[in-house]
Amino acid sequence: MIYLDNAATTRIDDEVLAAMLPFMQESYGNPQSQHSAGRVSANAVIAARDKTAHIMGCNPEEVYFLSGGTEAGNTALKGVCAANGKGHLVISAIEHPTLIESAEDMRKFGFEITYVNPDKRGIVGVQSVKDAVREDTIFCAVMAANNEVGTIQPVEEIGDFCRERGIFYYCDCVQTAGVLPMPTKHCDCLGISAHKFYGPKGCGAIYLKRGSKISRLISGGMQERGFRGGTLNAAAVVGLAAALEKAEKNRAENNKKIAALRDGFVARALAEIDGTHLNGDGKLRVPSNANISFDGCDGENLLFLLDLKGIAVSTGSACSAGAVTPSRVLTAMGLDERRVKSAVRFTFGKYNSENEIDFVINALKEAVEKIRAVRS
Image 1 (spheres, helix red, strand yellow):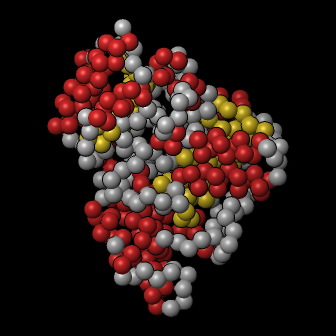
Image 2: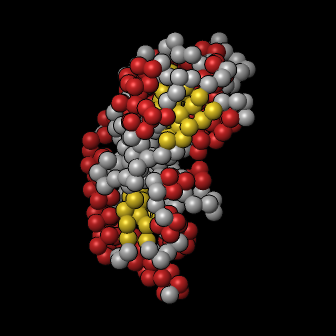
Image 3: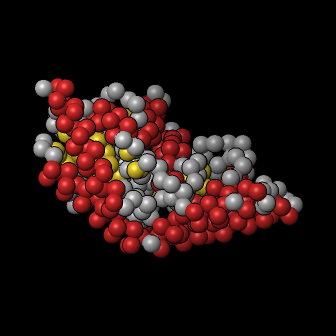
């Protein structure tokens, strides 16, 4: 299989898996237990928290482990709403469904929402966010980079503005952890998910600024200093920290390699296949992402034909896979319906190689030609 869906999830790194295994097979005690087996797990969690905090640029007491990006977004938005009781939310229209659906959940309780559209490049303007803010705005969410088109957002400026206005700012860093510096100093909370940077699924972390006005989302125990109940998966937490540390250490090398693969693929696709269009800004994007529309094609059909060739791609957000509705992100960017429906997302990772590009381009040409022939 040629795997080009790394924005959805990545293969776990061998060294990360090796770091996790002892806490799955030998030192498997509950980190909350008081006996020696529990203390071994607890010490591993403490070390992982310290390591994660160092990379995030914050204090260990400001790091909380949870299940991933979805819980991180829910925790931030709903926690702030619960703590304030009422107010106005500003959400970028290209946020992950986590934030969109969480906001809509809060609408039922009387909270008002303003969605801010990006420009045609897929970038949310700082001024657009400022214009959306009201006197009663309590929460703002603009992600570090979009998961569908990869566009990098001006989160530092947006975060600084929110801080001046006393607005809680949440930054979804799921697509940028280990790829870009974390904007910890510019936000009140940010979320990451281990399986996006070659770590385990089902484990994530948030930075939460000390003293933030927020209520807990999950009750039921004193885990995570009483903020998030539930037995910690010590092995997964160890894996998250190990994966994040390795991603940060090799960031420049990985980004250079992945960007070269992506750029070579995009150049060939646009040059060798007529009627192709790159969606999103050509430069302000994470190195892995290439979202391309193919005139006269349906993205779902292309995905199916490529899958038959052993090539894994996506037509949009992984959490919206199988949806028949047009991409909300591409629609918010102002692209016409035909271009939206013909879009395919190719996302590269550190395990991809140049040798795979030829095979993918040839398979893509064949698939496009087949679909266009049927439609003509």
